[in-house]
Length: 558
Figure 1: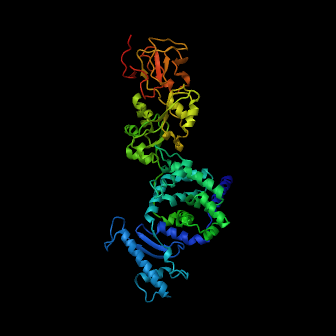
Figure 2: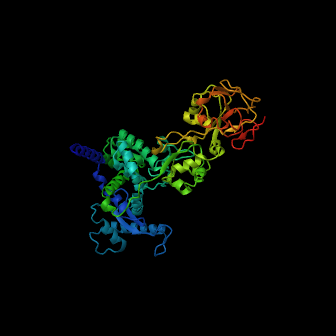
Figure 3: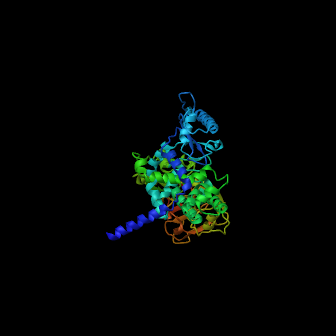
């Protein structure tokens, strides 16, 4: 028991030590207090008129109508804000002339402004009109975000711990998006962690099928990588957290210009216009969130978090369209979109195929049923997605499949699976190699990382009633030689053996090296004498005239 108690104490002390790294700069305390009010005191329909440099200088708070509504005076939200700003500016100008010592003789907006700032001992508080700024409250959105955070809180905190990072960094996601998965900024930052596309590409996959910035789990992994590197480069959490908004390079520039890594010093001397209101206040906003979360039992009393995200995960057994998933009846469009927010609109709408092996979330308890129904699809349906190729590469006869894959930025296994050739194979000169869409690149969900890549049903089993090929291994041949279409790779395995199969000039491969052949071998022997498998067509075109697809073959001719 003493050992357990000691370990618990060490862990708690370690966590506390990491939390203490979030330095409280005295000059920022008014800003922290301001953002706490923005998050949990002022509502969306409350507009705050304040000084943009001294956030302790709050002149006035007014109530305006919601978007799309009007107030009692018939003013829209924008009109009410405009009038409120004009009234506030007029009152400040008047107070600058009067410089009153008490509220006696003051009325209306002048009296309101005076009472709001009378305890702020700043001589120029009425001479700062050029610094007047407008901010709306965020109470409703913060409360909704706090509730939404329950979906991902457990995973995010675990991921932070696994990376040796303080759990308090979950506050960055609150500052960025208030945990709204669909958040997108006016400059294009996306998702809970608000990655810009150029930064997202450093850590995630962004292509025609997936934009992983929208997935809260994958984006959390990326955010951990960024924050870990930022702390290593910049040396302190105030700087690393600020860099999440301003960039590592930008913060390095601030440090160089200030001649100090002290965040208080940097704030005092930084004059760079680019280091504007959002960047200067980013760390203060983060500290405000930490204060709220640490005191959530009182500050957010009665606000419930949503239950953790619950789902099953599977890997696509072949390139498939979203419509094929929905057609199983085990998942609908709304569920597909909600559970897989990284899918692009085109992929979710079934306009482009999802790559073989991609991990997908489905409703809890439905994975087995989805997989069974996909497995039961006709062979032709399983190969629909293979037709969605980006390009066809003409082999030089010198490069292996692995080398070709590298040229197109694909994994060797991905291209090998798509072509039915071993990754070490060297396709014959002129052979057409279908290159899967660049969107074949994806990041596996954590739950799928222990799942093997499902075997791909590569070859649409083509039954050839009047065709044969010389079998250089043990086996037999029948009939006349098959007439091969130009640039088509075809492999026939005879019923009598598993030797090296040679088909004309196109390709010579060891049959057992070919993915998925074992799953097909023998399937057609009873329908076409002495021919087990025809593989390699990929369903793009028939390799020769007169082919028939498995299940619809006419009786063999003599």
